[in-house]
Length: 92
Image 1 (cartoon, rainbow, N blue to C red):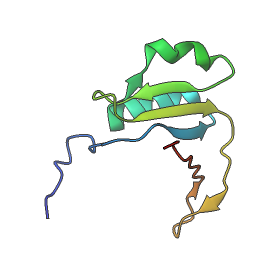
Image 2: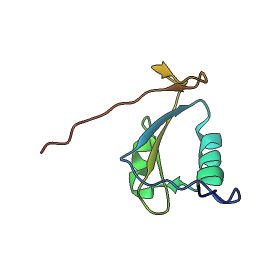
Image 3: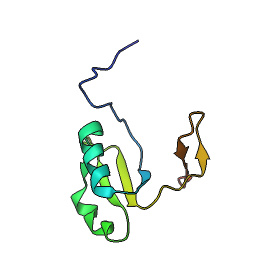
């Protein structure tokens, strides 16, 4: 089993985007930057006024959409953490 270097952010490999509702978006941006090494996606910054603030990893393979609002919980995992999963089929 490969062990991750605890001084490095976890490796994120791919996905369209992950929607995250946060009560304090500036604090969340700092956390995502410091912990996951994701940064503002400047070309989508116009969406931030009333919509999501888009953050992306350096490889451009994972995007987080931060909404400033109280979290919406559709389901909880075995540890009580809330999450929502939405899937879409790609046309063949």
